[in-house]
Image (tube, rainbow, N blue to C red; front, side, top):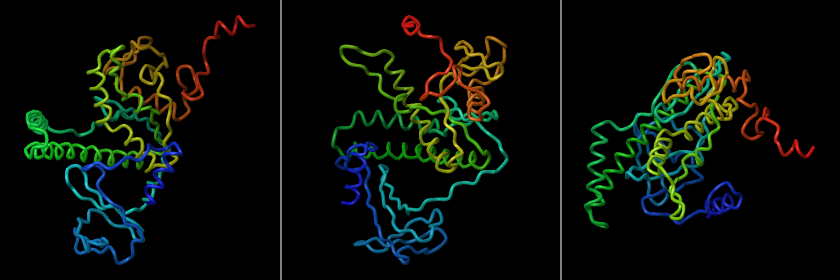
Length: 322
């Protein structure tokens, strides 16, 4: 009841959606509060036990150290059928190295992360054999009858494959964000509206949209890359050291001469039409993000996305009013 009251308060506060009825297989779990000191104990190097009311002692894999003085924990079950226990504790942020280095981070689909230092990284995905197996399972799922035992087994196999991909993505994001927080004092990143970028483009029957399948593939690529989780974990691990900059013209601006032209940007190569400077397109954008975050440069027309452009042509209607 306390969780429901808090959920309704968040909904009326405008920060969350209205709480909905639970669905089998989604969000399964419960929370235990008022945990005592003896309710968690370690049995061996990799095995621990936790006391659950009405159940008793339940063993779990001791994957990391449990901080002392925890007051609550949550037991959850994911779609792949795996059970987890998470103890509530706020970790300490990663301290800044104190070197004064600033890095710009550009997020993409083909290249997940490009740094202004020239380094790039990609989210690990399923291998060729795993993707082929996933395709076979999806075809088998389409032929299985609804509500049948066979369909349930196929769905479980698909869920396990997708959970493996999700685990790899989360592990890569955790390692990448920890490395960035340890190496650099200031981290510049674009302030992207990911929800708006991944909105469906189906349109309406009266006004059908174009390139719907291509837009759906782009949405899938953005969500698979984990842009939102990457930015969120950076802010958690390096609070106060993450600078969000406006994304306008960062990929079209030459980092050498500051000339802005759409023709300069190719898929993977940036060749300035003004000075001839060449660089990796994602790395060039990351350098622009770094310069904006450091205060060494501004966007093409100055200002940020919220305040609006500073340099702009005078509007004709305003001139006529004078």
